[in-house]
Length: 395
Image (cartoon, rainbow, N blue to C red; front, side, top):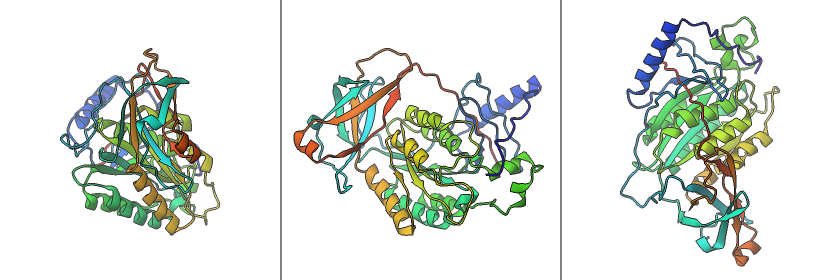
């Protein structure tokens, strides 16, 4: 909030220490499930600055040429004998679709013959069309803990707990809790344990505000200074790569972002956060909220709309507790009112390029209703390179 992005640490680390750090990092990730309290450095595509918390020993972030670090496989594993749709082919393009009418009610009566899908303007043949109600959910509640959230955090916590209680299905869905300032921290790895999730939501707090001397002292240590910053886009990328990307394919991935969108320190740009979410098939729902008593910064509605709508989600801007509760309720309902559209792209070129997707209503009766459709705006074809992300551990 008060400082520019921290300067990256010196790259002059002895070669032997680099090797040992890499071996220790790999050993940690292969050990099993994620641990709560993990602090994740902000590495972007280009790499971001490592962001250690006070106390723990950091693991250096990888360079752009670094190889991927193995990541833990979250639990629980979705039911394999349920009513979930099976992916026919790994080359299929899958699109999650939600439709609402003029009264903003969810439309759950659309049939396969009512729509058509175009990729880069070319009509595609649907191979699967199914309601996604029963497909497991993998969620991440991503909470901004910068100074602008201090006055609204309690309401956010209450609404998030109610959301978890109403949406999470035991032994079917999983959720995680992640917080961020200038660093990103896993408060609770993926689980279906509501008590554990509620405890993680309850314990987050804003540590540094406008009056904190640490945030006004240019000589303060970097591990403290970075907690006075806000890295929204980095946190989305970290959450996707460290948590949601390691969930089984037969899940729907979603991030619930609680923030004002006022990014002060991300090494990545908003378009990179959008691209990363698309690559990992993650829908981002933004709840734009901030403490109105804070006169530094602002609510970035356009940015939050962009990151949500381009990934197939929506942005909400509640003005009070009732509207905040309603936003969470609507997200929960939307997650239960989706359709899955699958097709084999007619363009088979593995060029790694972005393919724009459009879904159109072809049924004349439905067209008259002027339904509003929500879906991700495209995907990246095979061949696109991705940059891995490392993590740090706090005992």
